Amino acid sequence: MSFERVVLIGLGLLGGSIGLAMREALPGTVTIGYDADPATRARAQQRGLTQSVVESAAEAVVGADLVILCVPVGAMASVAAEIAPALREDAIISDVGSAKGTVARALAAALPGHQIIPAHPVAGTERSGPDAGFAELFRRRWCILTPGPEVDPASLARLSALWEALGARVEVMDADHHDLVLAVTSHIPHLIAYTIVGTASDLEQVTESEVIKYSAGGFRDFTRIAASDPTMWRDVFLANRGAVLEMLGRFTEDLTALQRAIRNGDGDALFDLFTRTRAIRRQVIEQGQDDARPDFGRSDH
Amino acid sequence: MSFERVVLIGLGLLGGSIGLAMREALPGTVTIGYDADPATRARAQQRGLTQSVVESAAEAVVGADLVILCVPVGAMASVAAEIAPALREDAIISDVGSAKGTVARALAAALPGHQIIPAHPVAGTERSGPDAGFAELFRRRWCILTPGPEVDPASLARLSALWEALGARVEVMDADHHDLVLAVTSHIPHLIAYTIVGTASDLEQVTESEVIKYSAGGFRDFTRIAASDPTMWRDVFLANRGAVLEMLGRFTEDLTALQRAIRNGDGDALFDLFTRTRAIRRQVIEQGQDDARPDFGRSDH
Image (tube, rainbow over the protein chains, first blue to last red):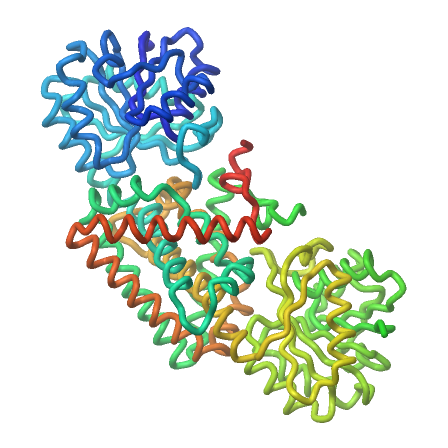
């Protein structure tokens, strides 16, 4: 049931973390890695992100029963085309992209006849590159699988078991619903964080050094999110355009209502919202999706 | 030069942290506390947030040479009126509110003839109440003082020395400039966080339980900020209305431009912004205003 030969294409934060987690949890599985960047390949070899690191994507996938594409969403189609001729017929193809609808369609078009199970482990940090990965990244996090109707239950079970072995909890979902949910819980938060950090650094009345000095009032949390990988996020917004624009419309409506409440001095409207949002935080903590220490323990408290 | 008898009105996160920090750093100074809430007073006494906790604000300030108001911005004027008759003529009055222009004017109107030095320690966590405070809260954080022209240099030096003793770095600034700077680095980030958490919980297509489950994609950081004290933040937005609306206008313009870039598939515009914001993060870390561990060490990495 388990995989014998797993290939990771792309050895950044996600690919590297999968490799390191597999080394701990599934030491009997052969892992092969490839990254388009020679410096990343060299570093991946030094850190042992996979058991071997090879020189081309096509070479990597020969004989593999599972290939996981850990590249930016916009690069999925070209990588799929590159590996297509070298794939075993029964190889399962997956990925870790943050948008699923466009990826599912791109992989299906490039790899007809294969079992394609798009995946999205909802986990990450602001770091990227071959030094960013670590084995614990997926522990207690959710991994969403969005198989098409052609995927057989046995393949789905095998991939689910792999993610569970890495510490994740698995959920199966329709790709389009995934894209709507993640637009709210991940894509819009990133877009907003990038925007406010950009706004702050462009002001004439407030200097950049003031913005940085007084960032402990809330801004610094946004700078962390806005330090995420630019290529990855550019691709996510372009790939999930529809859901992002829809959710952005809702956000903007709500922001406009709050703006009006502030202009009109409507303290009750503000208080009501600010009380409601507190309850959501409690549930995030209760369900193990965040650290309950105030300020994440940053104040050494 | 140093203060002999310091009164803290309001014993929540800020008042409590000042009291605990004073106990460590200035054990020779007498501290007296008061809070309008009897339960908070009882808890403050148990935790020893101040050396004594008394039953009224007027009683608290008798004989004090420094009174720090640690109440929501909207309560400053009424507390000032309450203590006015009991104050020593040479008592210095300060506060810790996150908006300074309206507070400075309210205190000046209520307490004519006193040395009034509004203050804002740019530090905090999402917790509030008498259990939230801790002595290390102000370490390496900035405390902004916004004295009016009537304040004498000796009084300003005494208050600066107190904050430095608590571990803070002190900056003197015009109240209106403070309000503009903090609108960007603190008020707008909070407003945006409250908004997106509200938006997410109101959607029809995505359930609240999905929002919570997949919050590790970025949303959970916003829930932390949106768990901040509702009364405090309602008052901040009403008190700093002008600067908040001005900065919100800039943010909305920039967000609209990004929205257009996404709609038009303009990947270069997205990539350029996302690269620029990364540099700001590096400076926040370099200047000691945030923890460099990825994800704040939440992943136990």
